[in-house]
Length: 261
Ligand code: 5GP
Picture 1: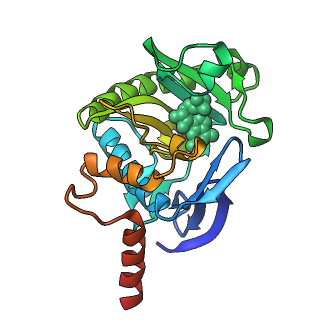
Picture 2 (picture 1 turned 120 degrees about the vertical axis):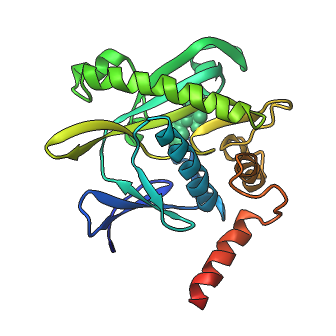
């Protein structure tokens, strides 16, 4: 299977065609954006860490029966994934109120929600990903009722699994964003989990100190994003605990290896 032409470039990832029509390559960039692209920078090593963390989470989800687009990680920055038609909705799952919901509804930051809350946002950068009601999804045919019922069931399982996985390593899963897509094979269409799950798409707080270990370090100018993402990877057992190798060094090491070949 060979890498083909670029099909799509997003804010944090690039999708390339392959010689297999049902598969594409997902490349994780180091670019960081926030507030609908108004704040932008490049953070060396971020893509490498997100590739590894997302691979870890999606393969664990596969093992509990959550079908998703990951086929396998290819290298430090790339994964082979199934080509899906993305449902144009960002599914936001909240366990603790923080971020946009606190401003929108005047809820106190850090309020623990009685039950997980699912919010829907239309995936449209030009409109700033506006919050929508479930009824909008049906009114404008963005997805069918059957698809959304299936997605909601998957979301609750994903949330339960991820809360437990992170709790086990001393991290609170505050909220996160998921995307789903339609995978078409043998004339059938099946909704599966797509995109990435990483500290770019989740809010992760240290269980004891509430230290932010996610993209809020960039959004709120807290600094030390790479050490925070590295900490998440180490706690999940992806990077060795003793290892002091930073993601930046990992990037350099991988390019040295490639040159030597
Ligand atoms: P909020 O609505 O509070 O800004 O975000 C809620 C959660 O969804 C956070 O974990 C945030 O990282 C994630 N999220 C919402 N929209 C986006 C987006 O467009 N890109 C990324 N990477 N994450 C998002």
